[in-house]
Image 1 (cartoon, rainbow, N blue to C red):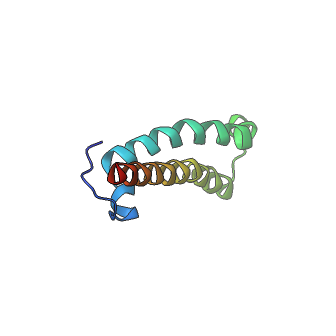
Image 2 (image 1 turned 90 degrees about the vertical axis):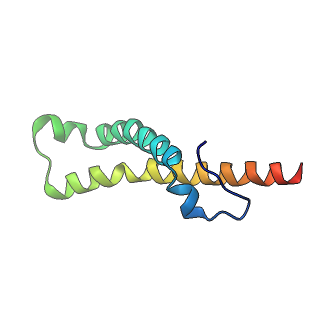
Length: 86
């Protein structure tokens, strides 16, 4: 990880680190696509997507992005804490 931080580094500092953002974006692209296809695939294929359905589809990608980011931040913090205790 390229991030230089200490055990008191803030959540947003870690969450906006390039490595964390790239990892979360890749996961969001894969998982979000699968979820969007499960939820809206039939409407996409038949061209019956409403504006609201497209908004919901885009928001679908935010869930895995958020989960991945949160998980990464917690993992970095745990790692820093364990390094500090060794």
